[in-house]
Image (cartoon, rainbow over all chains, first blue to last red; front, side, top):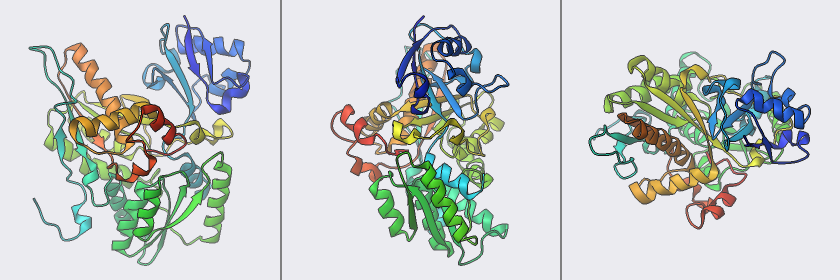
Length: 104
Length: 321
């Protein structure tokens, strides 16, 4: 049950700098628990204290957003590829600038 | 053919064209699966953003937010700036754009040609700098007006009132609508309209997945989700990498003669994914997707020629959508 997980730059401090790590699990929750066991603190950056996916974190299974696949209950299969990205959509810096202008 | 009183009146009403060569072939006797491209590059400044720019300015005028001679300040990575610059020129406003420095050279030249002023924010790891720059601008010019496309309901309303009805009129048998996800205005407006009118319609987002530079935030809490975004409007959301976007953009022009920007390639990639699923399931599908802009503004990237590896490298760190 090997799942390839792509880790964004800002979370690589937890993976010893690795861009890609391997994990296991038949659901996203199981995979994140497995990753947290190997890379302590990882889970806390993805999941809120209430147990939901962090608002500014997007996770994709084979390029599809997990929020439309059952979120943390999304099913995983051997050989799947999981990508974690910060939510920036188009033009991250434009967003940052806009947020600042509006005092948000 | 039609005639219009001014360029602003010629916004929208874009053609919807079938893609018989890129549509997947179905087995004999199976229901048809067809791809349709909405050519938004046929708008006055060459992108889908003309619709939003026009609606946002009109709404601001009607609500008294904008007065003749005002300065508009807008953060944009390109097309909205170009559209706003044209609208601002024709309606009598000055436009100042804050944009990342890693957009294509053509976009900058076009903006300046239309009369916009540009303030750059740094491309790499520079969100702090961008925030600082923006704060400084806002503090120095409290009288400048922001239309703020990421949270302006008029952005989505433009698509609810124009793009959606146009699609339904031209393709009453539509089963899927696929568009790019940036401000989310296109998908929210068109998606809401189509959901009200077409039972079971699928609204699919194609989100560009950029090179790592673009995600150079210091921490997760610097992320951003546009205020307009309402996930309940969408049925699925795909992340499309640079390589797939380039491949599909090249196919569009090589196979169907449509010369588009890379975000349209990303959208086609998602459209093809759902089209092939429909073939597999033996279901009829009329998949309409957006050509957001033409390829002209991206020629300087060099990504239309050479190997896919070269193209991917050329676009690394660029905001190609």
